[in-house]
Length: 480
Image 1: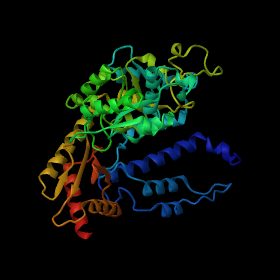
Image 2 (image 1 turned 90 degrees about the vertical axis):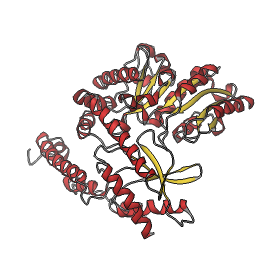
Image 3 (image 1 turned 45 degrees about the vertical axis):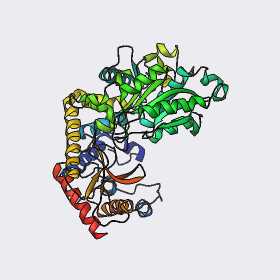
Image 4 (image 1 turned 180 degrees about the vertical axis):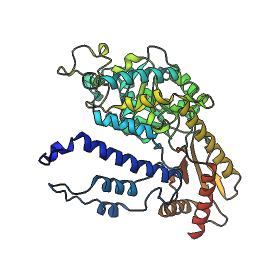
């Protein structure tokens, strides 16, 4: 590299990039090794928002300042460590190291994949992934779909199509006030993104009719009928039902066969939010939890939850592939030459994004390299361990289980003798656990009670970690 090269030229020097990359790989490998060894590395550093902000000054200079390796070291030290086996909190997966390298290739190439000319390889990969995932879901060859940035956009995309197909007028061109008010029936345990999607669609919060759940947090069939009757009695046109496969709070799978029977009887669109649970289709042991999924008109499935893929990569699948073109029915002549259905390879016809990252490469490469067995093993291991977790809870008189887990999500409470306010105790336990930095757990409200909540989502987590967590909670409560 010439001593007279400009900073811009130096930034694109191949040999400097190679050297920096080698040092980065060493840093990340050391971080991974320390995490898996359960070293003193905190799972989540106990640093509040204001203190964290002070760690990152914003007085950027025109000239070079911080060394890359130094700043990445700080990033690693202060970040949430999802690689740590005692990360058992939210539904954010531990990424496969290979998938992280693969993601690096995608960001390096930066092929925006909304139109074929900008991202040809990734678009072909996405098409094959959609075909593969649709087949796993039990859909036929007429199925189709797209990848989008997360389950929130995925749910919105599916419901936009449902509205366009099932409403008795063309809302896309005529507007939401052109006909009878619409309504959607959803489990009261649905993810907040479903209600948000309905509001974003301009239908209003009152268009959402929550359906009660039973003791195991499955959608109650009788209340589904009651809510349908209530909505139609209020002169609303019910156009869709959203079921969980599985729910976020408890990991419970709705009875999809029963819900499908109901939607068929009333000519409604069935959408299944399988963002978290869809990967159970890869398990011979647990795929029956999704029985009836093949009858859904649409579903979403997050590869970045239970397939160890870096965020974000959400598949939106349609049993009738032609319906995937109903969500966004508009033209942009400077991008497209043909009718949208002739251009399956231009995904901008079917997604919110006009610039779409290379989501297909995130999942395609690990599947091609490892095969499907590694993902089956991951799902079976985490689901099995969560059941063993529940066994420990049930065998401990000072703990209470909210419901037997169906997936890798578990909710429980610590209830020692003589506690006047159990809900407050759980809140204080969680805060203190986070302050001690050894475990990461979260929380949820179920039927007006406060529960601790864990998602077993790291392949390195063992029953020994779970036993230590329970003891850690006991010790934490004693301190309180």
